[in-house]
Image (cartoon, rainbow, N blue to C red; front, side, top):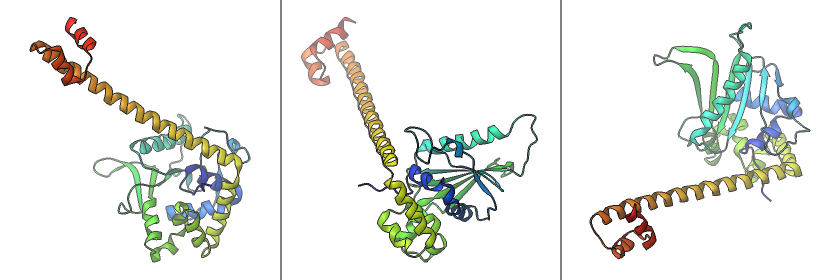
Length: 274
């Protein structure tokens, strides 16, 4: 039976959005942001239903903390559209708070943390993005994106680096069950995280949702592949028509054009009439 690690956005958030697991989430955020968080409140609790959710309903991890609002996203694969999609989420939070005529607190930060895979372990550990001009002058200083390269932290595990002990909160997220079990024996926080992740994996409604998600992903991938194949076929047909037109103009026989383009006699005669 498939076991879903924290690399899956849904599994990660099912664990981290539980009130009883806020200390795990807090430790993770403090490691990434390199600062202490004194207060933290989940903003979207009212959207949760006993921590099990309706198919297709988005599960957000949005926090109100003493340093500002924090949105966390897990990107199990890094496609081109991911940056645009995630930035749109943070912009939506920002836009809802920055209202015309309201008192504005410039000290309130709007932070997005992207836990991203498929970046390659040589791409650095954490890249921090802000809004600046070409001369590196900051336009606004409270809109910040932390792009965490999870491949970097997975590589620490696979190379058995001594840095693991200082980065255990990040290393644990991407580990599969067997690997996580080994790490959990050395760290109590990791042990608690694994225990919570196991509970999530045992929930029938969670597994039903994940199975549904994977089925939908396979269907989408299949449709995309079919669309591409159809597009290629359409392109090939159009190309053959152009070739057939030129051969007709040169007075070539129908049989020769059929052999050259794989078009039927009927198709070629229709082109000739037009």
